[in-house]
Length: 130
Image 1 (cartoon, rainbow, N blue to C red):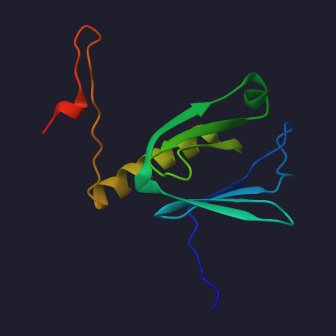
Image 2: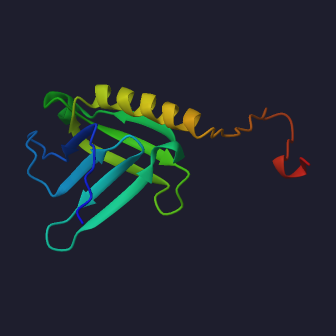
């Protein structure tokens, strides 16, 4: 039985000239990001949105010339702790869409993250907490 998926956004990694002539495809569903790559040997990575901790937009000069961008993500996923969504169109809009969806998923799943902020002058050891 074939699975039907609802994609909120999808795009392909593009070449330096802004053309989608590559074999990497990105698909965003309400709960996860799928990264499909390869033509003969294929691979599909699945990253749950609530596990993504940080999203950063990077745009080199050549990316800006062709209206592209790269989104760098840090996640709590052990198999994919960091990954890039490379050379996509409307990257700023996509980054905002990701940020909103990630926050929504984290709230729905009641996921919180603990961030330890330290002052360089103090010796705070998080391991010493009960």
